[in-house]
Amino acid sequence: MRAFRVAVAATGLGIALSAGSASAQSPGYDGNYIGPRILVGEHVGNRSNPHPCEAQHMTAVHVQGGRFKWQMSSGLVDVTVGADGSFSANNGGWTLAGRITGGHFTADYEAGLCSFHYDLPKQSG
Image 1 (cartoon, one colour):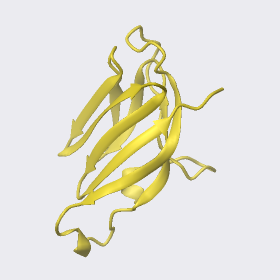
Image 2 (cartoon, rainbow, N blue to C red; image 1 turned 90 degrees about the vertical axis):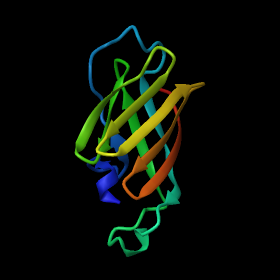
Image 3 (tube, one colour; image 1 turned 30 degrees about the vertical axis):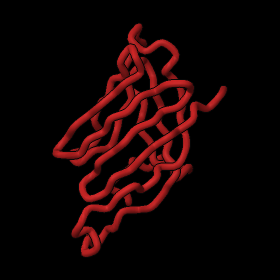
Image 4 (cartoon, one colour; image 1 turned 30 degrees about the horizontal axis):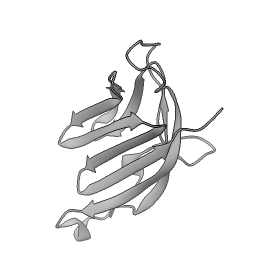
């Protein structure tokens, strides 16, 4: 669904854009994480939604300075990665919670009537 991602010109990937400056809070978390977003649940009543939950699409997250932006109900939200790799955001009943560990960005995202899981490996280079 277009409402759940920010399109990147010429790539067609869903993405969370980079933001912020260098931070001592996030050792080794900065980088690009790319992989599939997986639909794990559709809430009751979603069948009449003219924009049903999209089962899967490729997603890219760019963490810079221990921060990234994430598309939520009211637009892009600035998310900070903690010293332990954890992060969370809540906006208009949409919630994101996850952790970066072992070279993976893992997260669960409740976006309106759709629930998603992310396990995005960090890209080398």
